[in-house]
Length: 248
Image (tube, rainbow, N blue to C red; front, top):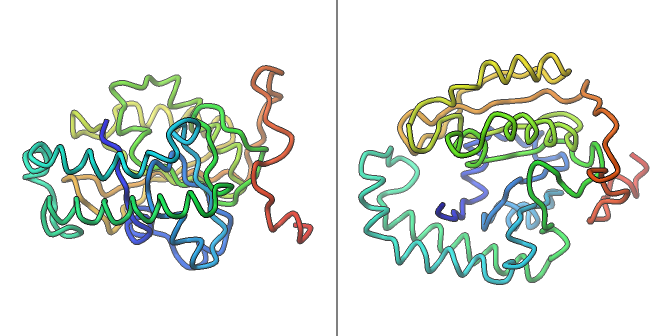
């Protein structure tokens, strides 16, 4: 699994983010070495990244992206030969952009470590409704032939638990098969029965052919069942939220 480092601009395109969306509290899960939170911070956006790699490799992750993308250049050229080259010029341009994004990530995680929280699906270290909008890219559905249906259900419900308004997941295509995740519609039906309706939206972003859709979960009406002591959410968020200071 190649660690990517996508930019703030790519996130805006992948998730069809508007200025109104970005005026909310946003979680990126899993964030990897993306520069979304770094640039969001410079724009005054209340955004947080969570990833399991932040537990042990937070200082090395950005450097890993720089080295790995360069080392695997020939493989990337071969694997992306039929991709849609509208966002990047070619594989070398993609490597240049990811390298710059990874360096931005490295600088920000050093300067603002509280914005980068160690954690992984399907159990996140945040209280219910900690965020307004949750973004999740290139894990769920992308690795649908490695992560089973139970994991997807649990992960999506966990994202819904921490999101007051919406969860957006991109893309919907399985990485290896290049087909839409086969269990998507049954999963959507299950989530709807649990109080999480959803819709599929096309976005103005496509890199791998056919990957131009996201799943949007409406979470305002979702109420989580009581969790066991072993899996209970933490009482306080790792970040001191501005909305709590404002009494929201």
